[in-house]
Image 1 (spheres, helix red, strand yellow):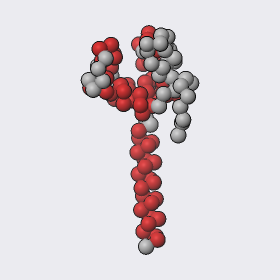
Image 2 (cartoon, helix red, strand yellow):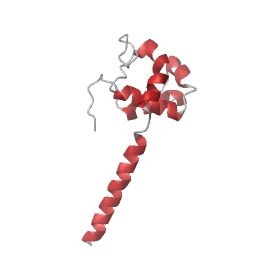
Image 3 (cartoon, helix red, strand yellow):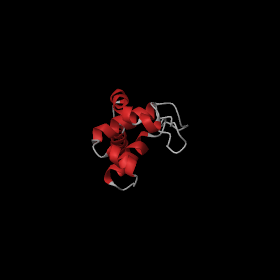
Image 4 (tube, one colour):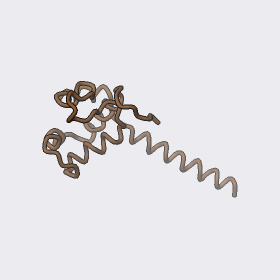
Length: 111
């Protein structure tokens, strides 16, 4: 009985590790190249140039990906962001999210 419980635990732990690794995709260097258009409002490293625009630097990568996909799908309504994200692929979104998450900015707990 104990062996079965250990195997189940290790299997669940492995699945969780695989899921978190797959979710944390994105290429920081590629994201930096793609972020030029974002700089006009959010600053080159995600430190916004005006209080009306959110700080992206240091934000959780998963949140940034979720937000960009929501703008792209129309679930979040912002005409300016909708125009910018309309042509982004999932890879573009992952790269941009990885880049901004890697920047120093907001105080976030990195897990």
